[in-house]
Length: 179
Image (tube, rainbow, N blue to C red; front, side):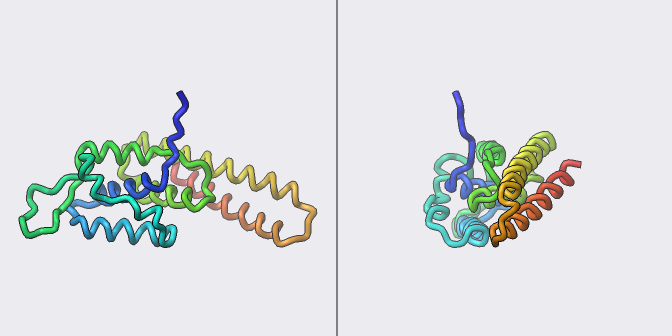
């Protein structure tokens, strides 16, 4: 049975929230977590109802986060990651990336780069290899298009040249992370 594990916008939101908690060495209030997620997502993609429509409260209901037992009755619910939440975080970090050019793909790439260091070495390397492979495929696609339109005198060929340079730079950078 084929299963496409490409992350959906809702899962990107969950990954950002779980990753933010995984990064923290102390509990985070619900309000601070929501603000942190909203800040990151809006700076990566601009304001989006798609991205903010899912409530972070679901993470608590699903057992992915819990209130820290050290929280006082007067606090606003300091949240920590559960083992189940950590496992979900690792699963989401292994979600697929179809290309590196779309808006959602750019967000997924940013989330992976932000939290990659939290993964075990073997999973981190596997993810870097996948990202580098996807980037190479993007580069091949744009190079083929550039070749097809090489004799045209238009802004399109200039744009293709810019895309080739960007993808070559990204590909080289990803390769350097694998060393």
